[in-house]
Structure formats: structure tokens, C-alpha cells
Image (cartoon, rainbow, N blue to C red; front, side):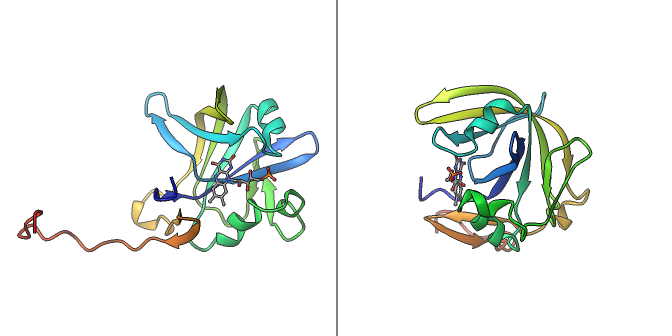
Length: 164
Ligand SMILES: Cc1cc2nc3c(=O)[nH]c(=O)nc-3n(C[C@H](O)[C@H](O)[C@H](O)COP(=O)(O)O)c2cc1C
């Protein structure tokens, strides 16, 4: 899977000891009606216990300006919600990382054991997405162990042969 490129998210939730969360690239769209998404959490994750108990998580879709957050939330657990991290509670309670324009608030519906991970299936309850797709921030991408930005390709040339 190192060859597969994916968008980078941070998934946050509340736990008995306060806010917690982790960087995740396994978020996937599952169903439009109802709106379901999935992601995977390692059974060794320090967030697993919180994930087993919470009924709601916030999925932050990171921009290419938020790489430092991706690094922080995949590093030491004590540094994730350290004083350097600006965040607030949504009215519904989930921890929201400052500066994140695109997010989904997701109700946990199923926890499915899958090897050394657990698949979380969730229902989208609320979202923040710019109404005009052109205003979407440029995404943060992960591939082959490195962070990348995304560069849109020019429109394809209809006169060019796809077989070269
Ligand atoms: C780009 C990236 C994507 C990741 N995606 C996931 C993921 O989808 N699920 C997961 O459990 N861990 C994922 N991780 C690992 C976690 O962010 C975290 O580093 C790991 O769980 C160790 O943290 P812990 O100390 O909380 O256990 C990813 C890490 C990176 C850097």
C-alpha cells in the first residue's frame, strides 16, 4: 500500500482523560444514502479504548498547510493536544482543530474486527465544506512514507490519442 496515495485526515474524539486523536489515511466513502464512511484503527493504537467508548468522532481533512498537525498527531500521544495545538469544542462536544475548513462529524455505527485493525463504520451527521468546490483547500497527500501536495493537471487534450 506504500504505492497508494491517500488524503490525510486527523480523527479526534473525547475520552475519559480529555480530547484525543490520531492521523489517519484510511478514511473512505462507503455509501451516499445513507451517508456512511469508514476508517481503520490499529488495535495497538493509544486511541483504541476511546474509539471503543465514543459514539462520535470528528474527521478533519487536512490541507497542505497542516502537515505539522499530521506529524504531531502521528507522534507522541502527549504532544497531540499539547498547549501548541489550538482547538475548541464543537457545540456537540467533539474536539475541532483550529484552521480546519473541511470536516465531517460522524456517529460511530459499527466496529468491525479486521486482522490487527478495527474497521469503524460511521454515519455522517454534520459537515463543514466550502459550498463552492473551487474554494476547497489544496489537500495534504501521503504516499510512500512522504507527504505531498497535489497539483491539478491541465485539462486533457481531446485530440491526443490515449494509446500514444
Ligand atoms: C499519514 C499517516 C496515516 C495514518 N493512518 C492511520 C490509520 O488510518 N489508522 C491508524 O490506526 N493509524 C494510522 N496512522 C498511525 C497513527 O497516526 C499513529 O501514528 C499510530 O497509531 C501510533 O500512535 P499511538 O501512539 O497513538 O498508538 C497513520 C500515520 C500516518 C503518518
